[in-house]
Image (cartoon, rainbow, N blue to C red; front, top):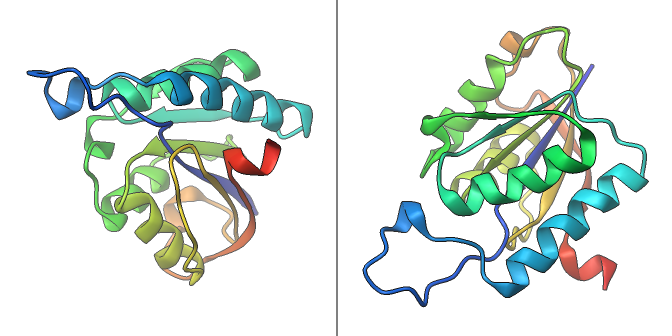
Length: 160
C-alpha cells in the first residue's frame, strides 16, 4: 500500500504583465495558504518521503513550503507542467519503491483529472488543495487507473 498526495499549486499572481505563465509567482493568498497547508500536513503526522514538483515558479514555491515543513528536498519534474492525468500518473509510477508516501505538486486540469482517473472521485480542486489517495499497489510501477481510493481532500478554506 502506498499513499499519493496530488497537490495543486497555491494561488498565483496574474498581475505581472509580460511574465510567462511558467514564471508566474504566488500571490498574497498563495504565500499565506502554501505554508499553512504544509504545516497542517506536518501537524497531522503525515510524513512525506518524496515531493515531486512541476518546474513552474508557482508550483515550485508551493512545493518548497511542503519540503520545509517535512525536512526533505523537492525533485523537479518538467513533465508536470501542464501535464495530463496520464502524464501525472506516469511520473508517480517512477517514484522509488522505498518511498511509501509521496506528493506531486502541479496544475489543473491535470491534477483534478488524475484524482478522477486514479480513484474515480470527481472533486472540486481549488488552488492549494491536496487529494490524499491510498494506492493499492506494492510498487509505484503498478499504479494504474482505478488502483487508488480517495482518503481525504484538504483545502485551504477548511483550516480558516
